[in-house]
Image: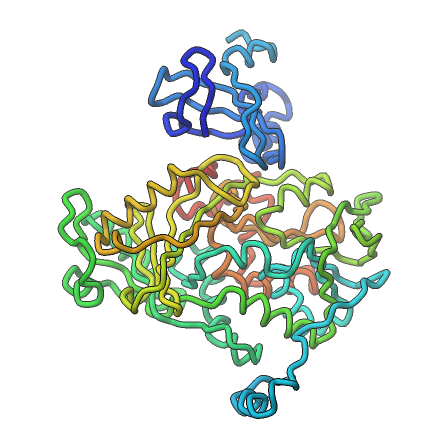
Length: 95
Length: 416
């Protein structure tokens, strides 16, 4: 697979390490009353879709940026690549 | 029809006109007591043991494509019970014992071959870990033999013993491990289940579940609604897809594992040899092909094919430990989709929906588990109680903190 890095252009997926579903950006509120249930879901449960999947890749052998890659899990076609920091800000996080 | 040597000779002399299909192709009925989703090894084994051991009279297996077309046809056929943890080892040893009696039980030649499995180690720390594992196996009634480097050399003189990074210091052998003809497992279970009245319905995809007030009363399929008192899903690889239709989120990611077969060669590999440090394992099929594989590709996928970097990685591992195979040509490469669970161990459990049961999360170790998985899932479906060897395989163990973390890599499916 080739990942089209927003700054560095097309890079071999071998330069990256994979973490998993981009829902890992949405860390629950640790002070909420139901934090234990929320963190269980956050850490262990996955939508695991067959089709469009947003996922976290880390450019370990490159500029060490975290990316959110939108990829089809049935064809491996990559639709979109964004910086994870940008996605996190869009989702209302401060950084 | 019973199969026997006499029967083969008789048919040979009479033009093979007496053979009959090994299972029927029935139309689905409107209602069954128990529906098993998935006509792979685990689903067919479940149906077989439901009919044989638990005397269930009204059982159907629903299969999207044809039986045995999923992971039971896409694996590397290894059986073993060399696990460490209490939650796992009794279950896998139960499975290995069932393998040992499988062919007589099914009256079907599954070519169970206990040619042994050898896990190599390369350091003192690794030897200590394997001594501990071997002791855990012995405590659970399995067999384990620790070999030093010379003993490994006697059995596998072709290995690269003096690699600078991973010199071979010995290995842990399980003599009762081995290989099985994978397709024959599906066919044998299908024949056995069918002859005991189980309806095996192929080309029947489950498209939804009928769930009302938290009770599952049947499944919607491409061949209409089929009612059932209990529904069990055994579709590992597609667990995420199927259970999503029931609104169940699972502690599972789907990943692809690739496997390889070389051209046919004369017998050279005595059993199964694993080189864990190099992500490589190998055996030789009865037809002579070297059957080998390595690690999962490491990203979510439902495509039954992988990428080339993993091919390169596996071949490098092979060349590092066994340079002689460099001259062999690879004939085929394929990928199977794995339910990678969060701790690397499977689940056989009820769900929060009454009447809906789940069997999955087998990671890349489902084939060896086929008989025990079927037996334990049948036990759960028939009695609604977990089998004594499968009590740890709970769906909610992550929430309760009772993970079965055999490899110690935590909630990282891509690291298992």
